[in-house]
Length: 606
Image (cartoon, rainbow, N blue to C red; front, side, top):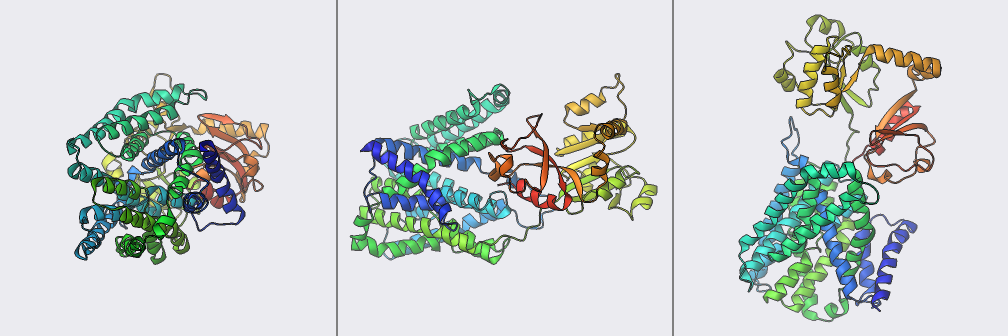
């Protein structure tokens, strides 16, 4: 019977997305459908899935992997101060939002205490302050919102709503429980997490170099981090999901390759996590809950509490987002289930909550988990966000750079040119966006925002000046630096220094030679370069939706011709069955008018 239950659960995990695709069910996240399916298959209705040792272990691993992946989703760049920010940032907005959740949760908890319905206000505040991070991430992933300000704001609110109640619950249980272990032992988890981060920061780069398909060192390291921190958490009396979440943060800070995160996501959402969600529903006994009049009377009140605690979110989120999305975000943040179940288990072990109250809390949480994501999908409307243009700054304005700036497609690039020559400024100011600076210095260029760009092109005829500018740009951590360097004197090591530092070095002589050779070998080269509608383009695959997709199945493959794929510092000749990997540089030719849409799709972070 144990193996039959496992078989039914695995078949359900396979069938759910197929059924949803067949009937075009898009308003309900897959995680919610899995919980509902578990309710149908479990003791509430059909009773064909029963809890056993195997499913319990796999379900426990599912929530651990879910929390690990949740930790890996945090974008720590959001916590850095933003220069010239005109809108409130996601991190600040999330902190304010979650503070309002705690305040409203405390208000409702004391209302319950004053009315005599529930005496333990601190425990109720912790429960009402929880947010189901796993369900939130699943909903945001399906909408491809995780990379957008709205998605990151809701993600951070959910992360706070998972971690802070988790810590509070652990401290609460330590203080009010029978254990003699000091609450200060909780610091051991964080100390171990910091040690693991420091220990593997440098070796991880070595792992990446020697890794191969039969070793998968990155995945082995991920599970080592998970088991280590989960074991430490359980040893010091904390919840294992706290250790898993910290393991995800450590893995994120190690800066894994995109392929690593993709493999871990596939493993988690492909196997472990669906079992957790299905078994969460299967464990619920609706018959018993609905047969108890006291529990039925509590459910509406407790349900109101979950939404009451998030009531101020709509007002706060409107500071940054449109009204519909503020409402949608409030509904999604009202989702709770992951932490409620262990919280109620702790509450019952402490003797502060009865079986009837636990059942009512659980059913109210399940209702939020089912309906809140659906309401989120109903209310959410895409923000009016223009496609982010590639910001290109030219340091050096001359007869070479001005025509390049003029010919770059205005819909794809935001161009600014800098010069310290008043004569060149007067000559070219009417032809391009040129800024005149009294003199170039590292501080002056930083103050002028010359390094706040995706690409900085250094185009002075003086290669020594370009070398100095390149050093400043490297110090400012500009993503791409292109520098002109005509001299290749073997006694001058600067050319090799720039290339070793990642600067893309070019010379007009080499460029001319390459072009003339191409004209001889491929006569149509010049026509492609001069054509006003066609051209050669390069895009980077950032959208995980295309990961694993074969070239022949790309939605726009009939409009372009893919000539090469640059992957892991090697060029690949693509075929129809060549799979797309995250981070691939796709080099193709096609109509310039289609490039913006293709780039918007494939370079979208999600």
